[in-house]
Amino acid sequence: MMRFWYEGFLGWRYLRAAPHRGFVSTIGGIAMLGLCVGVAVLIVVLSVMNGFEQVLRTRILSLTAHATISGLEGRITHWRHDLGVVEKLPGIAGASPYIEQQGMLIHRGQSAGIEIEGIDPRSEPRVASLGDHLLSGHLSDLTPGSYRIILGKDLAAALGAHVGDRVVLVVAQGDVTPVGVMPRMRAFRVAGILSIGMYDFDRRVALVSIGDAAKLLQMGPAVTGIRLRMVDLYQAHALVRRAALALGGGFYVDDWTNQHANFFRSIQITKHILFVILSLVVAVAAFNVVSTMVMVVKDKRRDIAILRTLGASPRSILSVFVVQGSLIGILGIAAGVVLGVLLATNLEALVRGLEALTGIQFLNARVYYMSELPARVLPRDVLRICAIAFALACVSTLYPAWRAARLAPADSLRND
Picture 1 (tube, rainbow, N blue to C red):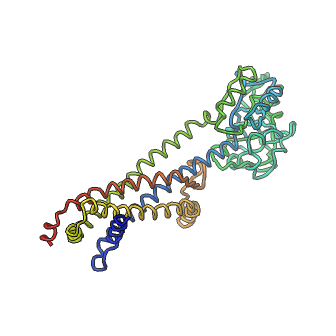
Picture 2: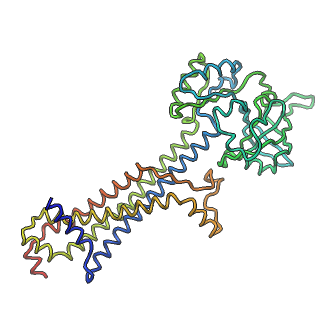
Picture 3: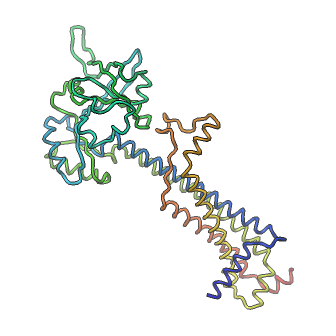
């Protein structure tokens, strides 16, 4: 215990240089600053990537179900019976029928390609939280035979359509007439505006009643498939296959991990690459400790010689400078964690302030899927960053400490 306090005391004392030798403390502060900036940048970048992933997953799954069961030919006829069967299966929180088809909307000379989503307003809330994203209107407005439609915010803006306007919905299926094949179309009245917060969805989504979609597409009593919501979304892959087997098989199954697999995989790959690249920044900052400690050892040659003549062992001298280098690492990393967490938790406000100050929009929703910059600080990421930075800082102290331990007392006193 006495040895620990003796070596720790000297390591801390050497970190605080005397007033007439302030240069050592200055370069020690620079080394701490380098570690602080490197750790803070790494925390902020990883937090932004975590925030992107969380927000995108939440928004995507609020629009789409966790899994779908559809017919091999694009339709399920006896869907009411199948719906009752899958709703009773353990692990499935809700189910709802849907009709999906591509089409085109026309309004006052403007046209846009869309994804038609025929939904049942009564059962759709069991699988998706569309109602929470409505800027106007209600899902209950989509009653069969009313021919009403809910448009995505950016889709409505592109068409110049507002609530109450009439738009023409055109589908690829055609009717044979004496003048040739004419595309099937129907006028719909805009009943609401939907905003998911992701441009790719808000630009192409259009919701109609499942009954109106069936009539327009001449599907009769059939639907495209059944959407499922799981109690545990990470079990969707296994549960949707179990549900299809419970219905007797012969269905096409899909789940959110497959539908958006490449998208979320690209986020993970980007996160890993950024972690490796920015870890090099931390490594450069950590290796600045080497130059700092080398100068400290050179400055303390006389002290080392006196300690050796008083009986201090080389191991004890080595421990003193390892303690000093470790303290530089700990203080720099601690400051970096505080700075990084503060920046990450207030990042959105900082970005908005910069946008207002410069007049530049840093995040274009058409490119980045969202207009805000979310950040999510994960404790495991912070701990991993701290562990790597501290390990690099400790490794950086070994060589200077080893040189200090090998100094000969007589040579050091003779040179001074």
